Each structure stands twice: as structure tokens, then as C-alpha cells.
Amino acid sequence: MMRRIILMNDEGDCSVFDVVPDTSAVLDPEFSEGWLCFDRGNERRRLAPIPADWERLSEHELSRLWTTAMRVIRVEPIGVMRRMVDQNPTGGTGGR
Image 1 (cartoon, one colour):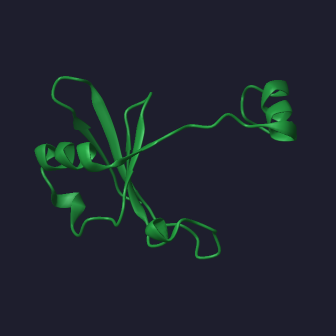
Image 2 (image 1 turned 180 degrees about the vertical axis):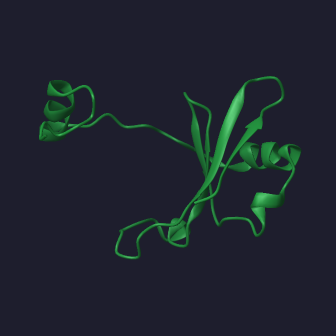
């Protein structure tokens, strides 16, 4: 996985990286070949398919891709997973 940090028009940094899912994962067909993830801390976006040679694009070109990428809505865990997260805020499962 390649990761780049870019400056977004004086609005802070954005981490950009490619995600290629395991072939056994059940995904929307649009994302089955992978996607480019843009993470700005409080907002995450996905762009599929991964643009060819995205690693060589300028910060300006990556910033433009951000505007066309689909915003990801973060969902809170529910049920058993929610209780596990609430009981262990560090994110671990409690095992040592």
C-alpha cells in the first residue's frame, strides 16, 4: 500500500492511500478492484477505480480527485461489537 500526505488548499493535510480488498470480501462491485482513500481526520472519501499512476499525480491533481470522490459515512458499531468497543476503548479485544 502506497501512502501520500498532501496539503489541501490551506485546509490541512490529507492522507491518500490505495486499498485493494481481499478477493473473498463482499463489496459493491464498483469497489471490487480497489479504491483510493482520502482521509482528512474527520472526513474520509473513496474513489474507484484507482487511477493509473496515482502515486505520480501532483498535489493539485489529487486535490481535484478528492472533490469527485464519494464521501464515506462512518457508522458506529452496534450490538455485541458496540459493547466490546465500550468496554475496551483502546480498541483491543481484551486478550493479552
